[in-house]
Image (cartoon, rainbow, N blue to C red; front, side, top):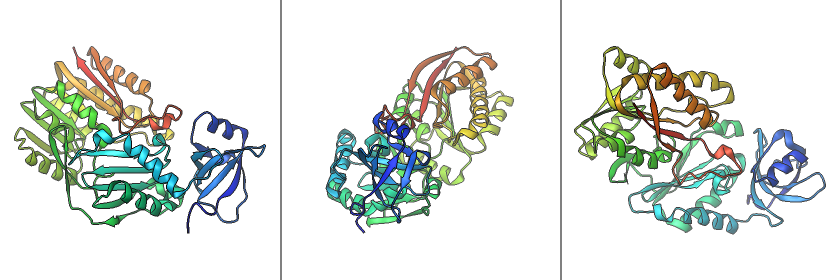
Length: 392
C-alpha cells in the first residue's frame, strides 16, 4: 500500500497547534482532539480547532508522540518530495562523503525527517525507522536512497527498544543489495573496523567523531579511556601518548578494540575488561595516576525518572577521574543523556572537582558532531555534552 494515498484528517488542540507553529515537530496524544479514521493512517493531515490545515504528519497510534510533522502547508508529501528532502539532507554532508569515511546522512527531526536515521559507512548505508509512520515509508526510503547514492547495500538496524513504544517489532537485516562483513573506515587518519550488523547504535559512535579529533590535541603521557567500547578515543590518543589503557565491561567490544589497535599498529594501547566504577576505585587505592582520563559512558538517564540516579553516577565517575589525574592533567567528560542538561552536567563536574579538592579549567565546551545538527526549535535534538578540562 502506498503510504501517501490514504491520508486522513486529525484535529489537534490549540496548544498542539502553537507547538507546531513555534517550529516543533511533535504532537502528543494529549493534544489530539479527534482521530476520525477507522484504520490508523500512516500519514495524516493536521487541522487546528478552526479547521485550518497545518501540514502533514506521520501517525503513531500507540505512541505518546502521536504525530510527527513531515511537511508543512497544503501540499501533501509524495515519494518524489521525500526523495528531494533526503537529497537535501545528504547534500549538507557532501564534504563528509569521502571514500572510506563514515557519517550520519539523515538525523531525524533535525533534518525535518522525523524518526528517520541514515548512516553511511564507506559504500554501505544503515537505515533506522523509529516510528509507525517511518516504518510505512521504509520501501520508499530504500528506493530513494538507492537512486541518490547507489550503495552496495542498505541494512536496517531497527533492533531498538524505542520501537516497542510504537507497537513495532525489533528487526535487523539487509533491505537491499549485499550484506557486508566488518567494514573498514577511517577517521582523521585512524582506521576502524565497524560491525554494522551487531555493533552499538548503527555500528559506531559517529556523534563523537569531532570530539575525538579535538581531544587528541591534548593527549600526552599516560592516558586512560573509560567505557572505551571499540577503542575509538583510545586509538586517537595513541598517536601522542606513551601508553593508553582502555576499559570496558563488554568482552565483545574489546575484541574489536584490539583488532582496531592491530589495524593501526598501536602497540602502546592495552585493553582491560572491567566495570568502570570498580576499576576507578581500584586505581585510586593502588595510587595510579594518569595524564589524561576520558569518560564516555552510555546514557545513565534514559528517562526523567532516572535522572536522580544518573546524577549520582556521573558525579561518581568524574570524582574518581579527578583523583587519578596528575597536575595539569586533562579530563574529557561526556554525557549523552538528553534528560540531563548541559548546565546540570557541568554543575555535577564542578561538584566532583570540589569534592576531589581539585581546581579545574574548562578548555572546551563541545557537543555532538556537525552531521548531528541541533534543530533550534527542538531541544530534543541536542543530547551530547562534552567538556575538555584541565586539572590544576
